[in-house]
Image (cartoon, rainbow, N blue to C red; front, side, top):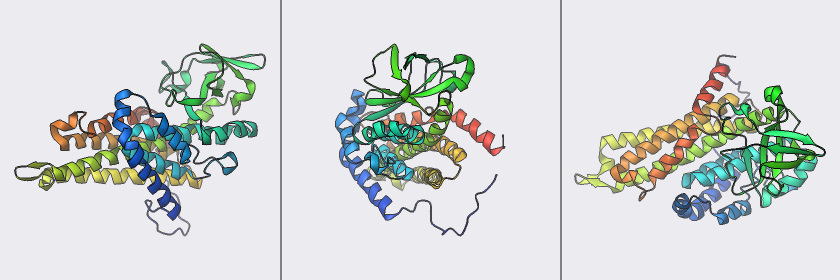
Length: 370
């Protein structure tokens, strides 16, 4: 497996942060503790994300982290977006994924492929008040993403879109969608095109979209989807890292409070080993997330690392949250305690933005040079 050559780089741990990064992380962590965590249970029970939180995300600059200052964004780095997703997910996975999709998928796609006119029109909205969503999946188009059936037919000055999309994260809250449709089913993946869709565009079964809202080139939507999801997978790794951290912290605290046989259960070697195993896997996951994010910011190839990060972090989150429930015992399985929610939240990490099997397929091809 090829190694990246080091060119007189200082020996700095991957988990080391600059002063600005530390300040940013601490601000997000404090916000997550004070504003997000108290609402997590209620939002879970109602199945509705609190609108006031989204407004605060914008106020804190979390929805336009990499958007340049000229468009009203924070002009930050991808790594900062990853830190935000991790810290928010530690309190509530849904908060983490709202910020994740906004930054790593939608804003990323606009920054890389939008025309100057599109950037001027949409990026200020993305940074100030408009949630973005990413519409790729369909009923018959999951892992086989490019089997999508949504059509885009050019009629005069507009494309007319028809079809159905599923699993659109942020769909209810979104004002702008990056949507993928095919202009020519016979062309296979080379017919797929990306569009910028505004919520106000007329039509439900058929949506009229101006030609000026094609994102990138006609027929090159597959490239946008693939490359955007590569970055998005690091974001999902960060989400799963945050979920695992949150569950572990509750389990470690409970183990020291819960008493059996006259002493806290944390004094029993069996529990100590579980806590230690969980902490070790979380640390390994953190190193993978941070490494992949630093590689992306540094302009190094990161596709393999992104796939490995998503694969491993989703596995760690599933294992850690399951062990956290076991530390709690019977009550851990009830909704009276917080760890069962982390367990539920962990499962999606192995499914969306590329299943674990798809990540393994990608990794295998890359490590074997195919």
